[in-house]
Image (cartoon, rainbow, N blue to C red; front, side):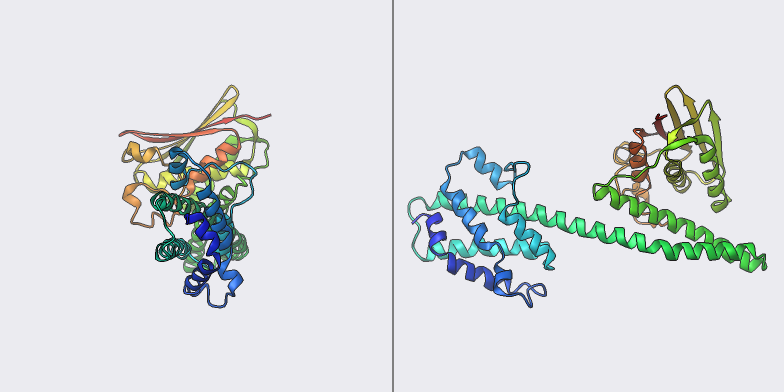
Length: 372
């Protein structure tokens, strides 16, 4: 008997084995009934049997075994994809889900061989069966990972939103204490609270923006006509208060007016300057230059320090990245999102951000179209 026919003939027994194994996957399976434990197992097996009965070329078999079978746009989710979705929502982890497929593979082949149902085609059937299971695993793992990422990003987005109110209360209270002039100790404590609150706010903003991009929402901007030079000067004044021991110079050349989201570009500048403060030479100034020329405005932030290696420079705008020398430190309590967020803000404005570095200076440059 060919393996496809055996699967159809012994479906009840195979599903019973599936359920028996799934029941051992604790704690997720603790209170699950038969229907939930079996989930899409029958549809997965039916799809495998159809696959075994369908003639395929060697190239098609290879693509399937490596999870490269094309999925048509707009096509409904497969049984393996839906199984992954429900397992993720039921609290299974990805290792438990993959273990289900390992157990399924072993039980089907063992039942087939023990039953003596194999024939002269059994080797080809076994190869085709393993390739079909591998395809199902690839589909399930991809969908499971997508569901976990979505759930994590939604959670972090809600967490970031809910943290804003208590953080604002802390910052307002700290500002009130600083204005009381109640002595050096109180003023010093208030200043530390203000600095810490500012850092927390920056981290929180980066986290929320990161999750927006991961959810496919992009960076939200509200462009108006502004004088970019003035807005950036205001942002630098705030940063100088938070980092009074660091020198940050601003040089403006030409007309710097245009249509942009001022708060977002202040955030972009803040991320670039904070990066320069953290990683640049402590005894050298951070240089900020804004140049209005034609249809674009060029913003540059430069600092003296150790040259960034090419391998690091190539991925410096990727999320959750830091230079190798900062991998094992808190790097100023950074999430490693500042440069990624800066790139996304520039992109939202139709601009481009680039980085260059040598033994003399590291420079981040942002080209911004003036808008309409």
